[in-house]
Amino acid sequence: MDLREYYRRVAEQEESIDSRFPLIVSLKTANGGKAGVFSEVSRPVAARMVVDGQARLATHEETVAHLQGRLDEEERRREALAGERLRVALAAEKELLALKAALRVDQDEA
Image 1 (cartoon, one colour):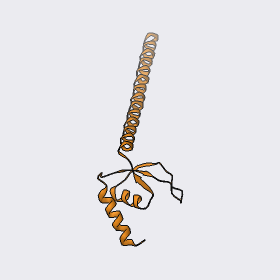
Image 2: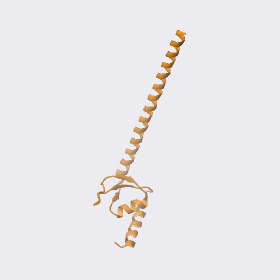
Image 3: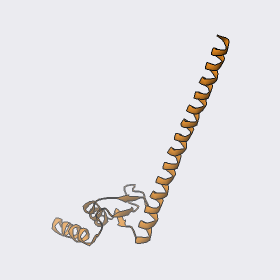
Image 4: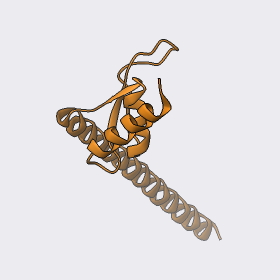
């Protein structure tokens, strides 16, 4: 392929992408590329990968589903962290009560 033609196609593809960081979906390639992997990349990278046949731009529905999945994952992560903080707080309260009880026993013995 003529390099001028290649870079013209890349430039045209980049101009057609309206998002700053578009979502692309990988395609199966002869050198072992796995199909169906979603990635957010810069416009120039997306344009090159589309022209090279390594990826395609995600559809609107795929983009919405991917972003919703990321939001759900972030919410689960936050809930897990909140649960860990709660357990630590409960453990600290139990330890405090045990220390108070131990102090009472020591004072009663003295």
